Image (tube, rainbow, N blue to C red; front, side, top):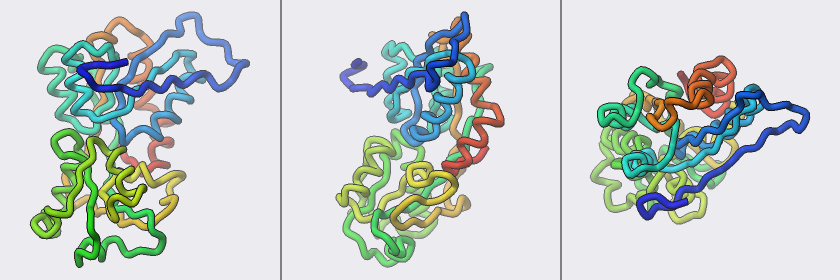
Amino acid sequence: MLFSGRRIVVVTLSLLSAAFTPLASADEVLVAVAANFTAPMKDIAQAFQQKTGHTLKLSFGSSGKFVAQIENGAPFEVFLSADQSKPQALIQSGRADGNTRFTYALGGLVLWSPEADADVHQQLLDGSFERLALANPRLAPYGEAALQTLAALNLSDATQNKQVMGENISQTWQFVSSGNAQLGFVALSQVMADGKIQNGSSWVVPQNLYQPIRQDAVLLKRGAGNQAARDLLAYLKSADVSAIIARYGYGR
């Protein structure tokens, strides 16, 4: 499906157990999800669908572009942003319910390279790389956090001509994983599973080097009459979800 000339990739997650009988009131929810939250949200969706019988249709992408799509009529019912400002903007414009907004996750930033046994922190400090990938800070909060980190390390000027910007955090990761950039600031969740960095080399950026990445969820006006949308927001506050997101390096 297309909105404002931009393609949205929709991932529909079906119920895992054929033996599970959906509830009589089961419904469908169209959810816009920040790209950094892709892996944990897929796990959350599977658990939520098994528990409730509801079906989630998930679209992953840039929070900034989602706002533009919602403003242009995209039929999303729930928005999981990578920051707090974009849900607040939708509330102020009357497109979201301010009483439903809450922080569903606290994100972490990591400097990462697919190269094994590399000291990526030292490479950043001494400039021994050709390209440094980060997400566009105008669209992605993780890109803004990356710029804050570089400023805190007094590396803004030294790295400026080496920076390549992804449209979102997923594209940023692709720049690094493909070798088009030697280093990249990506979301911790993109390289972590079960509480461990899965491959390559990384430096988990101390959180005192950037402002907290508080990721907020909100019910959009199109979802106001959909009980499944409200059930999803309630489930995101549960202990089950806290356990899932912790495996990917998120806090609350």
